[in-house]
Amino acid sequence: MSIFQYNGSAVVAMVGKNCFAIASDRRLGVQLQTIATDFQRISKIHDHLFIGLSGLATDVQTLEGYQRLVFRHKLYQLREERDMKPETFASLVSAILYEKRFGPYLCQPVIAGLGEDDKPFICTMDSIGAKELAKDFVVSGTASESLYGASEAMYKPDMEADELFETISQALLSSVDRDCLSGWGGHVYVVTPNEIKERILKGRMD
Image 1 (cartoon, rainbow, N blue to C red):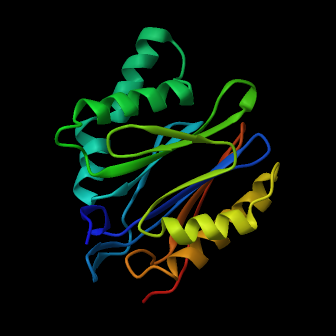
Image 2 (image 1 turned 90 degrees about the horizontal axis):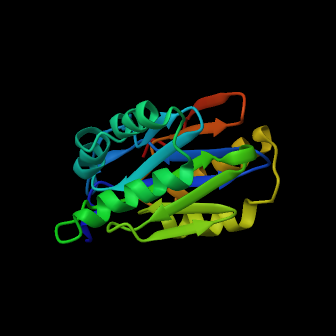
């Protein structure tokens, strides 16, 4: 078993019309043993920028806490007097990961945000910060294979926020049912220029 599969995870981000959604599962396990069912994988950096981290749970918490991504953003805000663009934040996370490339953080980030003119931006990267940009959806985690299939089948361009929520939720729930290391419900954020909707999904509890 790969160390990336040790705790199990599923993270997906999708683009809509001037909006985006990011979702994750809620299971924390040690291989096949479930430890917690309310694990937080998605962090809010600012109102229009979110990061989801799949992979080894200790490194997920280290990157969010010790590396202080929110703290780095606040320093940027003080210096620049504006919020960080998603593209800039993706480069920051990539640099943090690449810095530790000889003993990498064992997690794969998914970054989603609204840039200039409310244009959605999504990207994912590997554990040493090699970015992969997309115009429709990005996935990571142990359920990534089934997430690719479900997202490919369900995704449509230019969805409104409500339809986007429905699509990403169905894609996530049907994918984690096909992966025994992730699941136990879902956590979904749908972000538009004016509001953030956060919802908890109930899934199969086995």
